[in-house]
Image (tube, rainbow, N blue to C red; front, side, top):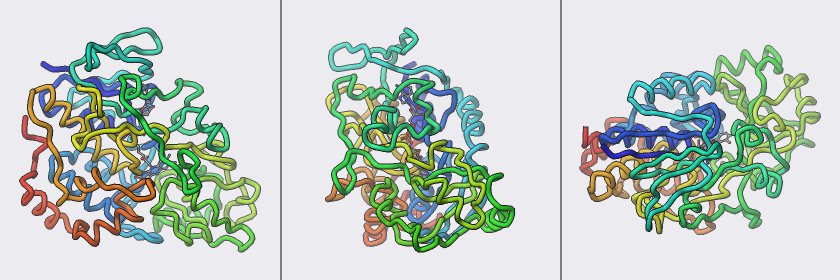
Length: 418
Ligand SMILES: Cc1cc2nc3c(=O)[nH]c(=O)nc-3n(C[C@H](O)[C@H](O)[C@H](O)COP(=O)(O)OP(=O)(O)OC[C@H]3O[C@@H](n4cnc5c(N)ncnc54)[C@H](O)[C@@H]3O)c2cc1C
């Protein structure tokens, strides 16, 4: 039985593990922290705008398990908020244990608190990866799902310092790019002014630190929109954030909160003294990143050059998914790219031709889409969502989406080897 080793246990790594397992391989998922889901432990917004279509396409393709979990763990479903329709919000505390149980049930082995630091190559292939604590893991095929965030030095140089985010680099050690270690080439995303990387676009507040009235409103509606006094409006923050789908004027003139079990505040950072001037926020405290009053994590620091099959250019048996595989923003985008990477890692092990997702599907179009300004892309808004609508790829009807996947000959393709 072939062995597939996936490095990085964020949404993309978990997704890759599930599809790789379905090809009949033995699968090991290696994660440097004590939690799966990586950045997925913050965030929580699913199914907004084109992400609805992408979720349903993945379900029809046979990669529905993680969407089933996020739907089941949703605090609110089918919510509209500024610039976004039919969103659901998963509970950011309850989802990680649910994913961990799912992976264990599927027979996926995982090794937490294990940081890969190097590769051992034989010719143009990786034979094994080695870890910070001196262990060696051999495999037939490898998938780099290490993300693009940090480590601390990048957040210091290109952000406002380590913001103490959920990735906890000081405790668990820095991210390592497996693709570069293996001889591939990584590139960086850039902000409009050319600065490398971009600030993550939201922070988590402690629910108990907000007024009871605000919390009630948030829990009832899923969303709260709190207008900011004119002197606090800072539109310059919009150009710094990763999430172009939220770089809309409403996000500068209001505080927009989302109920993900925690309180998600849709801005990269907000000085605490200023925040506490706003009604309802008098006692506000940041929960993630802890330094959300000053900065946020810096992302898109290491994106691998790859083929449409998700194979890393220049390394025979290495695939990649998630933010590692493109300037993709989001959980849905990570699950989508991870699913294809894991599936094609399995095909490679079986000696089969890789699967290429057709551009008649939103999930296929995403993989080859290029933004002229070299910026980040997402199903949820901005340029790529406009493209989806123009090209007739967007739908919010599951049956229509399923039929489109079937017409492309792709229904259940990820289950082809079961
Ligand atoms: C604050 C914030 C809010 C967000 N909100 C949303 C939202 O509401 N909706 C949405 O769709 N998206 C949101 N996103 C974006 C989304 O979370 C990411 O785009 C997506 O989850 C990235 O997944 P990934 O698997 O590519 O990378 P990551 O989540 O970064 O996972 C990479 C994993 O690899 C591990 N790793 C790195 N190096 C090594 C190594 N050498 N050895 C072992 N393990 C390693 C890391 O510890 C990490 O767990 C948000 C992001 C942030 C930061």
